[in-house]
Length: 194
Image (tube, rainbow, N blue to C red):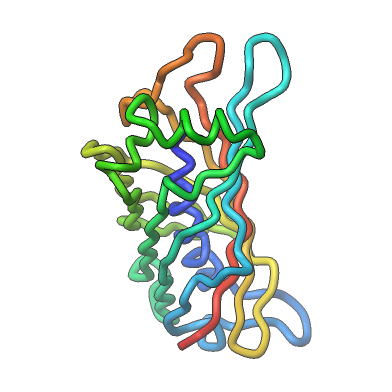
C-alpha cells in the first residue's frame, strides 16, 4: 500500500517547474516559479495486481502538501506531501478496514505517510524524475516518480505523476504473492500558487 508514494506525486509538481513549454503561450520557469499548495482537486490512486487477474484499486481521500519551484535551478525545487492512510478507499468496506488495520497501514498508530523530495531532474521539455524519502509505518525508503506538466494557468498548476513502490519496504507485504509486491501509483496533482 505504498499508496503513500502518491506523495511522490507532489514531487511531480517540481517537475513542472523544470521545463519550459514550446511555442507561443509557452510557460517559462519564471512563470512557474513559486510555492504551490496541493488542493482537493487532486487525485491519488493506486493499484495492486492480483495473480488470478485483475487488480485491487483504490485512492486516498485526504492528503496535503506543497511544491516549491525554483526558476533558476530545478534541482533546488522541493516537494513535501503527507497522506492520511485512514482515508484509503477501495469501494469495499471490508477491504478498507483491512487496509487501515495493523496488517497494512496501521492507521491507528501510523497516521501519516510522508514524502520529501531529495532530487529533481529534468527528463524532457515538460517532464521530470523526482526522488525522495518516503516514511511509512516507522520505515523509510527512497522512491522515484515521473511527472509531466499538464497545465499552468492563472496561478494554478496541474500535472500527472506515476511511479511504482514495493510494499515490502514498509512492512505492508501481506498477501504476497497472490497480490503483487508492486504498487502502481497514478496521480493527478492540482495546486494553486500562494
